[in-house]
Length: 142
Image (cartoon, rainbow, N blue to C red; front, side):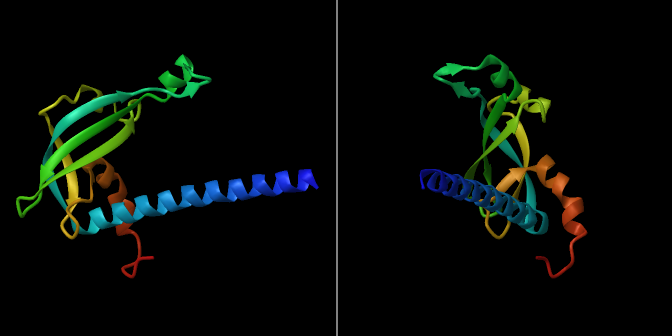
């Protein structure tokens, strides 16, 4: 009986993980669709550019995994058309966008924010990456 319960728990855990990943992907696609359809480009200002730590394995940082997974967290602020200030955060693997490594506090950072919901924003290069795919979708959307 115990192996059956363990197997069921493993399957349940796997289903929950897959559901969480799927929900995250759907949320990201909806955000990009919103920004592609109702986005306004502005120059944000970098507040922080932080190198995030790597994975911890047994309390010790794994140097191999840390180098493979180095991520930068860029915090920026911007103002919408009405003059309301907002703050955004973007996390990226340093290897994917190497120019983000040199961003410093006070530097301009091109972003796109939603005119319908100005608190929604993303780096311009990311929105530009999604635009071609979004324009190929049917007008009714999904």
